[in-house]
Image 1: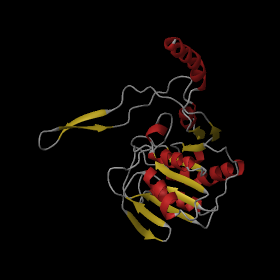
Image 2: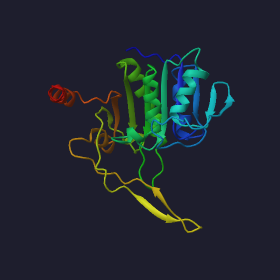
Image 3: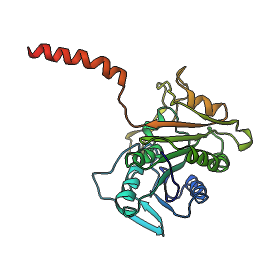
Length: 264
């Protein structure tokens, strides 16, 4: 599929004032003079592919082609393609640059990746960009800023099939330490050991705060995880068809046969 950067929509899950959004806007303007920013009013990290259905949404126009939405990242794309940009849809959607990697199972939780998911569902080519971080170290924004234009140009030149979204992760190292780019598969982490901290509020009620604790990759299923650890930019093509074809084929005959037998 040919991908055109003629009209670019940018969103994220870190919010309209996030530093990564400013970086991605700067990058987008290297490829297009028609760049729109429609992003959440506040941080929506971990919102996943959620859509707001139980309350009205409010929009705030900040300037021409720049809007804040008091909803989720998915809400932002929905508002963009069905309302704000409905008469002239974006030709490309880019998301991020997220503060923190979106690797392995992160893609199911990430609002940043969900922007690209929603764009793909709307048949608009979409890319999610994330900058990996390391505990107690500053975010290496200069790495995303240095390499995002090169990565985006390569992706635009190559193209990708309909129904596929692209997930890009920049390693948590300074630009001079980056070894290159790898096209990877989605990894898998061991999910036990998440950091859930129990606290007590001033009124004596318990509450819980989720932290990050998933650091160990499952052997043989950690390509994107391994790549960023080894200082390579990870590009992972993802698709939204969750059907497991082999199980579907194996199961179909047995289930159908049992159903026919029971009917007789």
